[in-house]
Image (cartoon, rainbow, N blue to C red; front, side, top):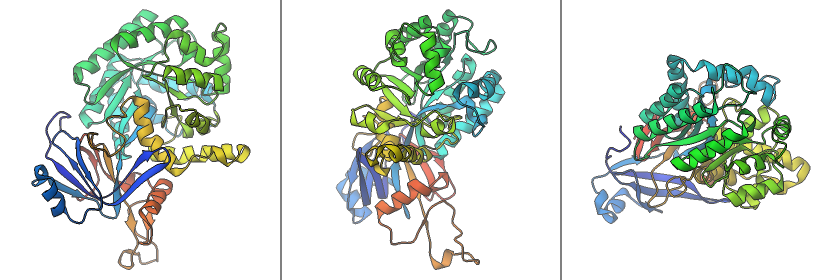
Length: 467
C-alpha cells in the first residue's frame, strides 16, 4: 500500500502500553485507540467497557474496522537510531577482533561487494524485512559509498513501508582501503548530493524517507571533507550521522590524525557537524566536557550496547548522559551488533548498565522502563520525529506493533509436559500487565510481534495475526 494512500479508519481495541516519561510506562488493560484515514491517532480511550460505547462516542468511527489484541498488547514501533544495512551478511561475525581490525577483516570487504546491485537487493530486502518483523518502524541506515546501491536501499524501504533515514557513506581518507573509498572530496560530495536528490524525488513529501549525510567517522575523512559535508547537510537541510569515540584505539587514532583538536568531539565541532539534526553513534569514551559540548549543540546519541560489548569497545555512561539532559536512543549497529532487534538492545542496555553498576554502584543502572523509553520516545527524539512517533497520543502517527504472548493452559500443554507455544514468552494468567511487559522485554523476540503498522498501514504480519 502506498504510504500516502488513504486507509480505512480503524479502532485498535485491547491492552496498550507506552512510555509517558523516562521512568514511567502507561499500562492500560482496556483501551481503544482510533486511527483515521491518514494513519493519525484521532482518540485514545481508557477503561473501555465495550466497542459499542466507543463507536457511540466517536461518530466518525461507527463504520471503522476493529483490530483487537488478545493475550497481549499494542506497543509503539521501535526506532533503530544506528545500523548498517550492507553489513547484514556479517551478522555474528566478529571473532576476537576489536573495532579497527574488524573493519578491515569483515566490514570493508562486505560493503565493497555491494557494488553488485543483485547482491545489494538481496541483502537489503532481507535486512529491512527482518527489522520490520522485529517491530522496527523507523530506522537510521548507513548504506555504502555506492550511489546506485544507496538509492536501491531507499527504494526497498519505501516499497516495504518503513520510515527510514538513509545515508551514502563518505570515505575520503587514505586510511580507507584503496578499493573502497571515494575518488576525491568533490566526488564524495557530488555522490552524496545525488543520493539526497534521489531520495527526495522518490518521496517528495518526506512521508517515509529522509536523506542523512554520512561521514563514516573521523578517521575515514579528511578535515576538509568533514567541513564540506557539514555544509552539504546545511544547504540541503539534511540530517547527519557518524560514529564517535567507540573504541580506545580509535580515539587515539583520531588524536594522531587531528592533533590541532582537543578531543574527538572537537573534531566534529570544528567541522560544523554537531547540530540538532546530528546522530552520534556509540560515544563510549567521551569526557564530561565533550558531553557538555554535544548537549550544547543539540546533537543526539545512539547507544549501541550489543555492538560495544561484542567488539569490546566499552560500557557507555548512559546514566550520566540522561542525568545531564542528553537525548539518547538505541541502535542495533549491525553487524557489530549481533541482532536486528531493538528489543534485544533493550536487554543489552540494561546489562551494560549493570556491568557498570558492579563497579560504580546501583545508581547507574538502567531500568526496564527506561530502556523501553530509549527504544521508542528516546529514539524518536534522536531522529527528530518526537512529535510524530514513539507514543500513543492524539495527533501522533499510528506506528505500532501488536505483541502476543503464549498463555499456558491444560489444553495447550504438550504430551511430554512441555508447552507447545509459538513465542518466547509463557504467561500463566496471574501476571499483571506490567509483569507481562517485563516477561516480554527479557524473553520476547520477533515471534511475539504478530503485526506492525507504519502510519496506520500494516507493513508486517504473521500467521498469528487475526486482525
